[in-house]
Length: 118
Image 1: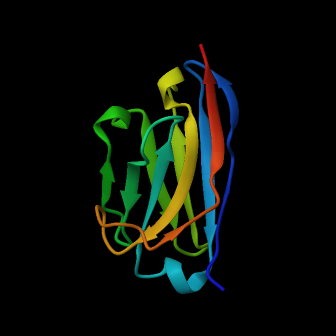
Image 2: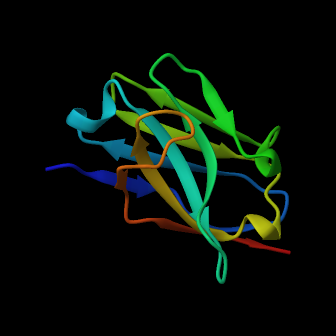
């Protein structure tokens, strides 16, 4: 069964840091891109960052220089290190599996809440 399980969300003050993790079943991790999307209340889901097996990455302009996506292929895990967090980063963050860096995901995790207080 395909599974993406996120962890690491929570409440943090503005300027703080959080690291999200996503453990994936092997069948959907190797050979595919992995990504993080987010959805704030009243907004559409948006791509935050994505990474392919080789390590090449793609970031939303709003998080460049603050967020870092990485993957550990030996652990089937993808991470999102979030630094210098802002209140506008508050959202539910979803781990995704997709074909490429900017393609529509074909599988989504259940989401983890990130709340940044001002």
